[in-house]
Structures are given as structure tokens and as C-alpha cells.
Image 1: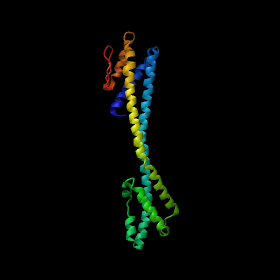
Image 2: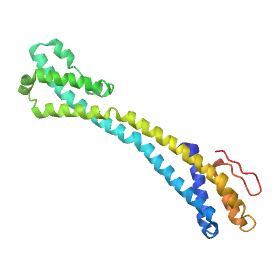
Image 3: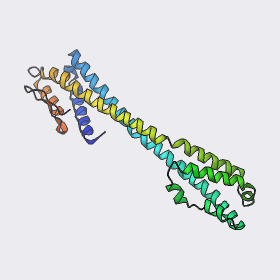
Image 4: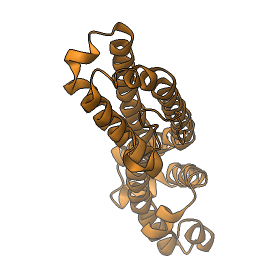
Length: 227
């Protein structure tokens, strides 16, 4: 939620508290009780959507970074042995192809890193016998290929996460608009109608509606709002 939405949600929460405390009054008026139920339902939906929005990017981003780090480490080990082979054989072209640092690999653009991994895997296959003499194993090759595949699967995730975040942002905005309309056009008039019978309750209700600079009408005034 944005800061303004947080403030408005606090107002909803305070309003809900007043209506809950006055259940003996509210529950005797069916439509007012239904409006209170709708307020609570919308508040719950806002909290769920806000949680989904926050989770949309946090999880996928963390997973991708972890996979990238694992792939960079696997590539560094493979490149190290390929460099040793290039040095022993005087293969300058191979040396140039496999000279990477761990930090450089981690800074490589997400779309380019799998291309580098494919290149290193190809070189490892070509020089496999020489690499095995230096301690490279079939398990390492399989692990490197697996790390490259796992990272490649993570690459589309941020795009999907951005889409999910956008959907939840739109949903949250719609829920706030619907809740403002519910209070302004339905609940406020029914509460205001109780001013003669339950003045203390009405006063507490509209005081709660005014929290955090959210303008709400007081008894006897026109209903306004900043929504």
C-alpha cells in the first residue's frame, strides 16, 4: 500500500472498531450490519492483495540472485581449469574465452549469462579429457549444466512478478474506491440517521472517519470525502 492508502486503511480500521463496539446498535439495523460486514470483507481483501503484491517481487528476485550466484561459482571453477589447460598448451584464444572473475560473472546481464554458460559448457566438452586430468568430474559438468538450466528458468520470473504486482496494485486501488463508496454512500447516511437516538455512537463514528486527514461529514453536514 502507498502511504495515503496506509492512512486510509487506518481510518477503516478505526471505523470498524467503532462499529464493532456498537454491535448492539448496529446489528438491530440489517443494512447497517451488512455494510459493516462488507467493510470488514474489503479490509481483509486489501490485506491479502497487499501481501501478494509484496511477495510478487521479493521471492522471485531472491531466488534468481541465488541461482545466479550458484551458476557464477560453477562457471568460475570450470573456467579456472580451462585457463590452466590453456596456459599449459599455450592456447591464447582459449585463454581469452575463459578469463572471467566471479564478480564479473555476477554482474553479467541476466540474458547474457546463459550464453556464456553455454559457451563454457561447449569448451568443457571439447577439452573434457584434458580437464579430467586436472580434476574435473562428470558430476561437475552435470552440475554446471543444471545450474545454467535453473538460472535460465528464473529469468522470465521478474517479468511475471511485475505483472502480478501490477494486477495487485490495480486490485488494491479498486478495493479502496469500493470501500470509500460503501462508507460514503451507504454506511454514513445510516449512522447519521441515528444521531437523535445514539448521539455518542454517531460522534465516535464520524470522529473515526476523520482520522488521517480523510474528510468525512459530521452529523448535519453534507457527506464529503477525498476518495
